[in-house]
Amino acid sequence: MSKQRIVVGLSGGVDSAVTAHLLKQQGHEVVSIFMKNWEDDDDSEYCSSNIDFVDAAAVADVLGIEIEHVNFAADYRDRVFAEFLREYQAGRTPNPDILCNAEIKFKAFLDHAMRLGAEKIATGHYARVRLNDATGTHELLKGLDPAKDQSYFLHRLNQAQLSKTLFPVGELHKTEVRRIADEIGLPNAKKKDSTGICFIGERPFREFLNRYISKEPGPIKNAKGHTIGEHVGLSFYTLGQRQGLGIGGLKAKGAQRGGGDHAPWFVARKDMEANTLWVVQGHDHPWLQSAALDAQDASWVAGHPPTDGPLASKTRYRQTDAPCTLSAAPDARFHLDFPDAQWAVTPGQSAVLYDGEVCLGGGVIAAATPRP
Image (cartoon, rainbow, N blue to C red; front, side, top):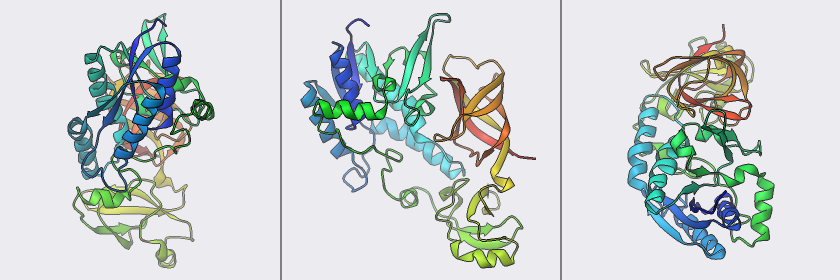
């Protein structure tokens, strides 16, 4: 690759720090940007953006590169957070990190970097980009470290975005990234990875949503239709959820009413019209198994849907690829059939399609078909 001006998104974490180092090693002109995406309570114990900026600035100092602090909070609130709240109020479970990548990191940040005269941008994501010479298109590939692959979160990126993007650590395993950071004396070499949604951080999720979404309590019912508790508002629960249901002490009562043995309870359905939360006992209960799904708002990396037929998919980030059969529609919708039932397929989450190591794109799950 010829020497280029590359703007790196420095987050304060070790992955983006090593990204900047690797590009500098290759002889590129590297400058960095720290993106501030949330500012409602960034002085709290949960929101770490101030600490992260200090860490990012320390990395830039060690590497000898410029750093600019850019505030994208207004863009984030309009393009990501507003949609996040709309989805939760509708009873779905959105993935704001996917929207943040599409709308902020690879749109607002990319636009800003281009204004700075960048030829490319780079981030610390575990993914790869490859130019397919046969088709002339850029492909999004899984990161080489299967435990860290983040292509699921990047599946909405398009050709224009991928053509301007580099993911240097996607070629490495996390252990190697840590080793490099330690070797070159980066101040954040041992900093633990951030977890959770960026604007929520480590805080209790329900406590955060309470500020923005009104509570409307209602009944919790088991599969036989018996009321066994009260929920605090359907928006605060997600399908497959096991913790925080408030019915742990009702095992005996549940058994008397047909709930069965002492198996744990799981959220299985949300009836928004009746304001009822349906729960079942046992991880393998039929209500938690889906044979098919329908998705909408599809986004395809190549700019068009893949050919209908057998592929693989993920309906949540941490799962292994599941065989499926794709039937795509022209109106940004698609249908997936699964030979093996999928667990807790959740409206609002993303179904992402793969052909081997190539991430093809995906869409937002609208509905799941229970296993017959």
